[in-house]
Length: 352
Image (cartoon, rainbow, N blue to C red):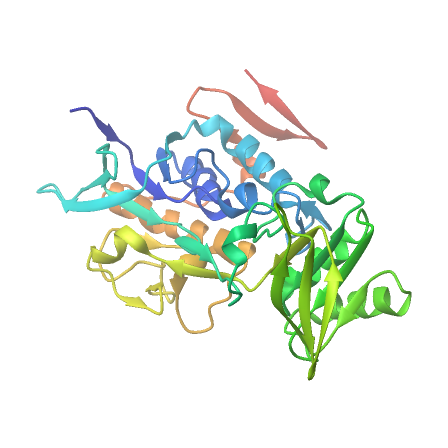
């Protein structure tokens, strides 16, 4: 059977995994990505491509899907390989110190370094305890927002008190007929700026906010027509086109949990004082899937972790070769196809 060989095998094709390709490419290292989804991008591409992101340095606002497109364009010169719609399953250490990773479909990959960048791992939406909710899934009940156009001029009810519930309330009120945000507490857990925006929308009668309240029932023949909301000790029936409970995701490390990695609360423990290596030499974990004291689950933190990880990977792959840090503004960016982009004056020019 054919074995796919690479320098760094990246498990997970989200933002952190994609940026790893770029940082590795600058060091002349080849990467291959395994992802269970049918296309690169992780949650940003599959779950919330239209969700705005505000904390990417030098980019005031960017849609998650656009961020992925930009990353794919950025790594294009380094020609990464992809194994998509497959999940990493089995790990085998080889005599030469490298690793074989076999997917659930039997594809074998060989690399000296593995970078686990699987975000939250595999995940399921955290569902509210409503008796007949399964009946309306895909027929008015949505746990993830992939295409905002389906909500245009519709009445929607969002339930939740975290960042996702607040962010989508702010965004969807721009295109819907009416948005009602329901939360079982009076306090929200999201970013202070988002809470202020929601409060302002409520004060201007652009949205409704029900707190404390809880959606406890759903009604409709073939599709969702209304929800029953408990407000204090009273119940209220509200007509709606969509009910969107945003209570977060339940992460699962799934198939890699039997690799012998040190795992704490569905996250992989790493040495953040050095290079984000796990307890198995040669295997790193970067991005939301890892944990260490002071960990922040932010995309920009994943980018930082990927950068340091690639420096450590170079030493493993080329133990007798010295790597000297050079700035891309001086060296340019040379792809594996021989193309090169280099800084000249105030513009970036492409050199064939």
